[in-house]
Each structure stands twice: as C-alpha cells, then as structure tokens.
Image (tube, rainbow, N blue to C red; front, side):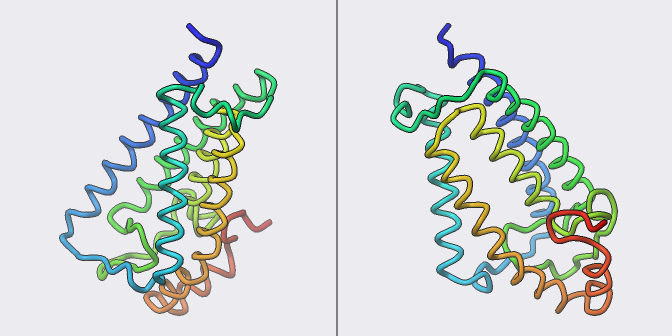
Length: 196
C-alpha cells in the first residue's frame, strides 16, 4: 500500500456515493420526458463550464488510477489537512442528498426550469437558494484536499466561478416562472450563503 492509497480510498468512497445519489435523482427527474433546452444558458458559458468540469473529472480520475501521473501538480499538505477532505466530502454528500430529496423532479442541468416545476423552499432551500452549488463546492474542496493537487484545485475553482456567473441567469428564469413568489423568496434567503 502506498501513502496515497488511503486518500484514494476515501475519495473513491465519496465519489461513488455522490455519483449514485446524483444519478438516481437525475433519472427520476428525466422520467417526466420533458426535453430541456440548454441554449438559454449561452453557448460560451455552457461550453466553458462543461470543459472545465471535464478537466476536473479527468484529472481526478487520472489521480485515482495512478497518483504518480499527477505528481507534477502535487501540493504539500499535512495529513490532517488532507483528511479534513474526507469530513468535508461527507458533509457535501449529505447536503447533496438533502438538496436533491427536496428538489425532486425539478432538477435540471441548466438554467431552464421545467414546465411543471414547483418553487421549493423546504430543506436546505429554507436558507439558501442554491444549496446544490454549495454541495458541489464542498465536494470539490474535498477532492482538492484529498488529492492535495493544485491542478485539481484550480479546475474546481474554475467550475465554481462559472457556476456563480451562471446563477443570475438561472435566477432570472426562476423569476420568469414564479414571479413575485420567487422575488419574495430571494428577499428572505441568501443566494449561496444564509442571510442572518
């Protein structure tokens, strides 16, 4: 067993749990049969976001296959800091489950809302309007800490920046769908961090 193996095992565990949860909820949402347009997201942002995400996934998979292939971007982090990634990843996975259970079949992978979407204000949506992105941020931080890899960390930051840039467009679509109800919801909740 190499020194990287325990971190890889923790990462694979968090990775697999998250994939199973997200895949299940995406399949449930897709049962509506509704085709979701990705055009309204904007071509440049859509392509850039997906390319950055692909880079993050590819780098993480390369690390999992053989960490030596990613040594060129290794960052010296103490063991306890790296292990904090397992805690952060567990929290991110738990938040993802809580978010998706409350979001239900409203889930899409773009800014467009479903025709029969409902305004969700329960669970983590009681405090923030985009807990899915908060869960993604926690999971990306976990991957960065567990791998102790600068390239993976920079890729994660790029993805998160693009999600933040995309969020106003998504909220505009939600205002178009839910009108004053969504405006009132915006006034009482934070976008990515609870209002106090």
